[in-house]
Image (tube, rainbow, N blue to C red; front, side, top):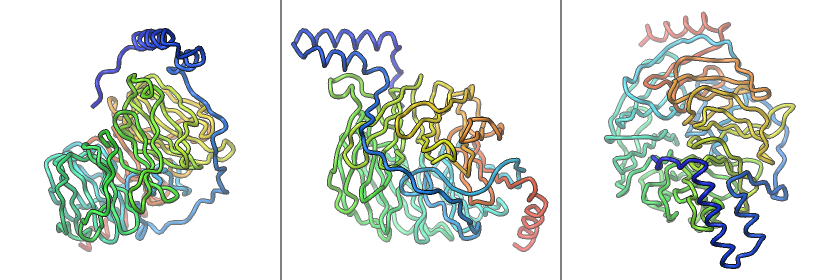
Length: 434
């Protein structure tokens, strides 16, 4: 966890003092103006932005659908374009009896979730029945990944483990020499993740062989994202890196503005999202940043009132346009213009937001850490359309038919209220046939 954030007045005072020192050193009036405003928002409208194509919801077969990693896709957009709206009814609830900080993944009718103590559960998505369980370490704080019949789990015990998705048998494991809470990225036949040592790994999925490593220079807490041949990851020390996926070579490295002058630069704890040719990522300095995916140039930064730990979600909202969704420890949930960083709307959640949101159709879901509630808001207006007294961190994924809500120590399945009777009948029949 980061150190306690200094007060706004003290931070501003230090910035002014440093500014005077720079002026005394004849840095120049232009630098003074730029630096004195650095605690405010930044906007560089000339940075390239790719307009989205036409969005079309798609049909999903729940039995064969795969949500393979944290954030759904390799770009970590956390966006599933399906027609699925409240009101919902709960079909089943699975109690893990210990903290589930991260959302599960889903593969062909089975959910895979990891408890705080590194115990992984395979849960039947239709019935909520446990298929198998396996303990792979002593402490975990990441979502697993799925690819080609294998489940990949990183642990704060300092290793990555690959398991058979059908029965939980360990296929291979590799010691990392450092803790990891970086939710794995599934890319082709490789798995990519970071560690607290500041090393980013690309391993072969079949046997764990190292294909390349990259040194970020600061602890990597969040998961990496992929877009257009590049892997993107944030690090402690306030840096964001673009790495060539094929060979691990650096493409660019960017930092928060304070780092250039030796000031506190904040830490990138969150997993980035990549869309519209931009990288979006929150920082513990209380800001959300947007960088050019091709060059690393800062497009904008937007301040909130407190830490931004959780990843962003992105969506081209009908009638509104490309939007970035993110929560803050200040208790507010933000919808930001993806091009400019301007605020489209905010929602006062009444509790600290530590986890990431997810867009399912035209609803964005998020949870509050201290009050442990989950909310669903209209992506267009911010109006609340769903609320549940269960949640905490990263609450919702979906297969287009059900939403799966992660509470503090549980996973629950919800269906449209109109489908509840049929769904419950099928669930009971499936349990009897076991």
